[in-house]
Length: 408
Image 1 (cartoon, rainbow, N blue to C red):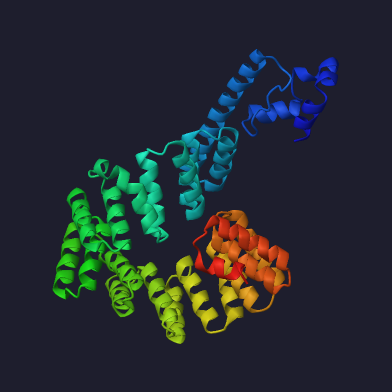
Image 2 (tube, helix red, strand yellow):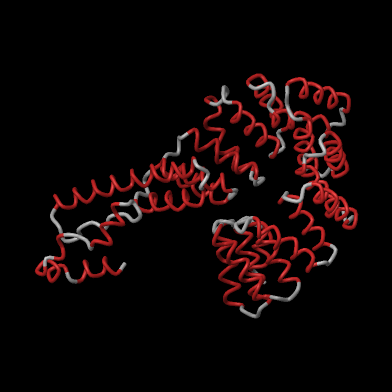
């Protein structure tokens, strides 16, 4: 920033002193290593600007290659930093945005991945890969109409892609077009006979219709095809829960745990379901037993913290969350839950600190800004609260809780 200001205000003085001929050794070394993009010669001729453009392209290509290598090694934070630098210097670089989305996805940040894919879609609205991946994220976030809007224009070109076909089926289910969705799930099974998401969609459809014998047959078919029955049951339970059939969902999750006791995701869902049904003591006992057998499982520990919070045991919940964060300091959901626990205990300073750290890791998540607004409001900072609510509303205008709290 300082160098840019000097170049803008004192070009003739710099030229007279000979400084305009190059950068400092430190800056040149950083550019050579691909750490920062070249600034360019603002006072140069057209030929100089072309040379600067070529230098920028060389830098971006080198930084991109280094970031891809970091991504492939599993160094997702380093990869994200690199990809962000590349798209900042070259905002029209489609593959930079795509890889940024992949890195965020690998790190577990759906909101960061969504922002990267939306940027890529603005550059190439007809890109099928971008549309399919973004539609999948929308389905996970229960934004089924948005997912369908992305897939409808390319429906004729995805019939041989099992993932795209499955996502389309899930989007159709989400908007209430269940029978049409079954056609696409059946198509997905033709393409991939062991597709767990497709089996999940069909099993949930018949469970909702009360076709118990058909459900049992489908589960046998899935097992014969090599699909994970526990995963299929868990997914079908998710679908039943969202459609208001809590009892059937709980049965699916219980069956999934009985089928595969190592399926900790199903145990976590079972515990969370018990909490939402008001059976908090039972939920806590179930999760404590599972966590004793799988002490490193972050999903179980997070669900147990939620159960403790529901029982009013905020300090115990905070202990579990701190232990989780010791193993994974970048766990955004744990930071969010810890911020809520601090707010429930009246420690607004700690709540603001944890929520701010969560936002630093995932700035595109509206719920984080919403919770930060609640903490600021409880701390007696109405202006800061209003600013946080405004950011949350901008990120997700249809978020019901954000709208309600922003208006208070």
